[in-house]
Image 1 (cartoon, protein in one colour):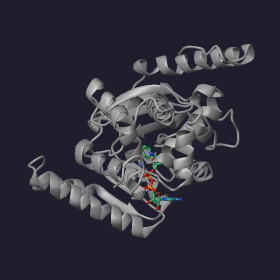
Image 2: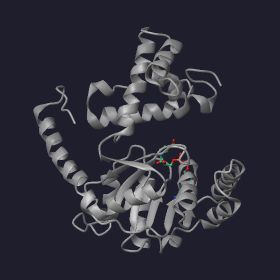
Image 3: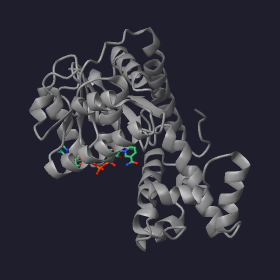
Image 4: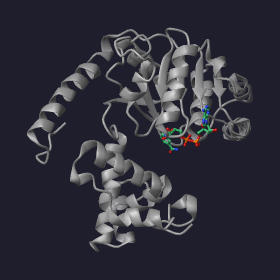
Length: 324
Ligand code: NAD
């Protein structure tokens, strides 16, 4: 990681200390022994939680205890799982027997207490810090002492979530089992998953998570617990810069998207991609980068802020840089 010339000397020193801590965390995993995940728990049956559960059941072949506080979300998620499995069968991607087996592995419940036997849990509830810390402190109480406790957060500090498992920071019996498995949307399609260690994460926890993601057919990358991690640290400034180019009149919408699409072989240009992600999501991640890293180069584009103020959030609201 390059140090920015815009940071003060003190900030440089703090960053160097963090980097030393992070690199020791990141260099440990290869030597550690992975434990086998035989049963998975997922908390939150929304867009991400359902996708993670389905891929774990279908590709890794493990039973999944799927917890959601809202029965309607569970019903909707399982209906969607049925649709996706039927599509897999109709396209001959899997047999009817395998689809039935995967479906039987999905075990919905509204009770967190049903996670008392799982080897790994992946939390995928909404991006609200107080909600996630409350879930992690419950998981530390409910799950067995070996369970890996993972989060799918897009931007929150993994170290803070790990710390919420205990009142005594010296007691790392639960916090050392916390890390992030940041799956990409839509989970059944995107191969990449970002594995982020907290300061407290043990090498064994990291090794187990890496191994399980590979069993799910994913290609994991590791990154340190810093704002935006890797994927959003790289992707969001790219999108933000495209919006700044638009507002500065350097190019119009179609020129910006066309040059990136045709010039870098990506499936869509940055403005269309922003519409698909949601402009409110893009803005909130840019704010996390700007506040967390304190560098003006992450300032959200004025046009991005004003489009969110107008309620033009992209595809989901029917209007963004394009109309839907
Ligand atoms: P979502 O709103 O679709 O689903 C969240 C689910 O959590 C809902 O079904 C809700 O009923 C449930 N829930 C709420 N409170 C709960 C509780 N106390 N206990 C159990 N269940 C509870 O959200 P999502 O888009 O699936 O996002 C989940 C997480 O994944 C967030 O942290 C988000 O930042 C992250 N993420 C999202 C995307 C994306 O593109 N959607 C991509 C990567 C990461």
